[in-house]
View 1 (cartoon, rainbow, N blue to C red):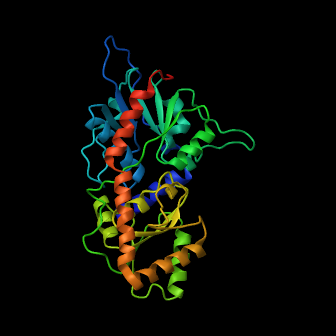
View 2: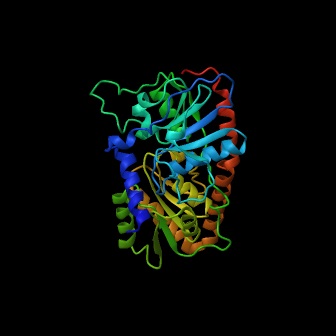
View 3: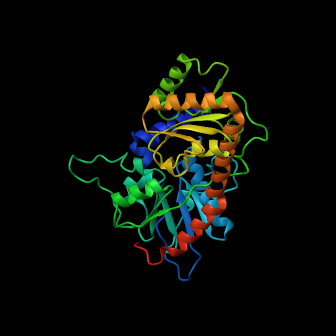
Length: 357
């Protein structure tokens, strides 16, 4: 097992189960300082010190990049001095928490996995929760039966989410809180289709639903559907390595589960894969059944049947499937472009106006 693979599994276990409360404590920042003159606000994004493939962490970096490119001061804040992510290319502004002495004009953006410890953050500046998976909102909470979990939202100006599905969840859970969807982005300079159609290769990312993945592949193997096909397991890879592997595969099997958005199938579509499988609920907004094969959540038999149909369709006429996959790629790269994400951010932050502090 590679170092990246090992760290990747640690990230998933931590975020999914929330077993280590210490990791959910935000980095310590300096107190809010009063200034005599008006200063340009800075938007600080708190981020855990984890250098392993994680779409959520990369999205935090991309937000900061987009804001800085528009002339808005923003920075990723890590707890450890000198720490920065190395598994994807970036030139993001990164600073250590000990160097941050915010002013009342600044905004502090807090990932959802720190939300249980908002009381440890400086008082006197607005907080925005960046919730990249609402299905994990209560992962660290220990609510008593029949009682609401304790979340201190009095100081929260808004909650950002990354999909329509999660926006509905957050609005239902917190009806008095402002909820805004900031679309995710897929980098078309990295994730794009190959010039020539790929051969008989199937990509899987078994970070979710490993047991379901094994069942589906076993069913397909028993029926002889995988004869002549290569299974490509993608786990713990650098960003560009992941894109290269996806471009080499004709089909991607999606095992998404209760996602905030579901970057793996979206990036697979962008790379020209025909995607079959679970949407993870949030992925319903881009799993177009005319260009992919969405399957009802948890139905492994329906998944295997849909995959078998896709494999047969490839054998009978790879061109038709390739065209559907390329159409899906074009839609992903248009709907989830960095420009679209940047526009949403530039609309949101100036609109905060009078904010609770």
